[in-house]
Length: 123
Image (cartoon, rainbow, N blue to C red):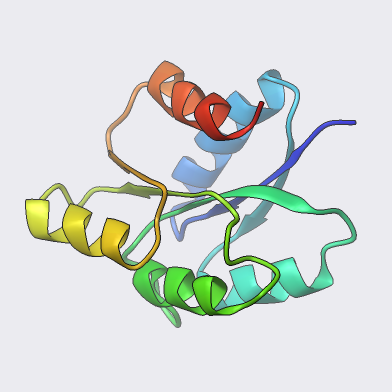
């Protein structure tokens, strides 16, 4: 059975591109436009979400707050989370990893790099 990945980004273009790349590798993909929608999607998901890819700068609930919320929950304390952000400052990367992200990639990115990161966490 295919593993499910949640893609969280307020850019429809990024969501479409990342989703396409993941679906081509056989993953099921759920999407959300911001952190609040991501929490709703996770709560209502019928399947286990194996990995989350999130942007940082989003309306309603940003990526940092989303990661913090997920890390405090029993169910998603250990779910791999990859940050995919246009923020490339060392401080942003450090903060993201400190609050519990598994990995940090900077936009623009090569699909192969993202897929390598995903396969690192999903065997």
